[in-house]
Length: 381
Image (cartoon, rainbow, N blue to C red; front, side, top):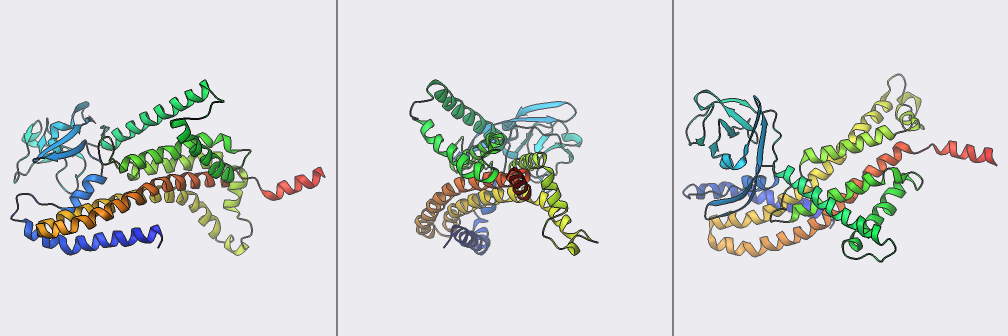
């Protein structure tokens, strides 16, 4: 059974159990002081947030507050700890508490325009507007900065070691990174782009590979500063895909665009009078980066959901009966570890696939027509 089939079976199993037992659990938990909601538990770990939650001990949440920066009638800055995970308001600002404003910061209206304090249950707080210009340092932004600092430190230290002793045998981080760098060069860049043209695009491909790999691995670390779902954020994967899109199309030669609007080997009736194939080929220019974006986002997010789902099963069955919870725990932990090992493999595979497809798209855009090369060889002879 392939990894893809295993993932599909595991995802289906987790979702089926959630749908079957969540209503039973919810009914039994109404009398409880606290209710474990599987959806909130999973989404709270894979979505972005204004603070970096670490753990909860005795109903006390331990988290790293991050700066909230808003452009709303001027520049407004304060700590995300002031909002206390959505339970408080600060100077009239609060986390969105309606379905439409969830995940955003809102400005309260009316008598609560400058309100600071607890948001009481049952009180209807008027919302003046949603803060559109939000440049806060969220959990994912903080994780991005951490990964950038880590990558800069790793590569600058390795580059210094090469500079100080170019003929010395690699050691430490240098011995770990050198095979990966050679792998990106020899198995991705050169075969896809060509030995005479790959050097122009090699720095980008190398950056792409290690950026995705490091953030995939950091997302698997359950403790701070790991645990952020950066490469499972569609905004991040979209930016990476857009960069590949611009590099591909800016570097494209006239042969590339000619093949798009007048594809060779295609019957004329697919081009005239309705330019069916040119339209399909032109749409393909935009679907290629879209596929890059969705592939990385979906695979990383699905992996996190499955892993968290198996852990969540312990609490679901435990709420129904402590004995069942203890019985299910070994099975859930076993599958958690099994999926964790698979996700470790996927971290490398997704970095490889994204970089490989980017290199292929670039190689297709700058490839010279083969018939012109053959004609030039005949002339030389």
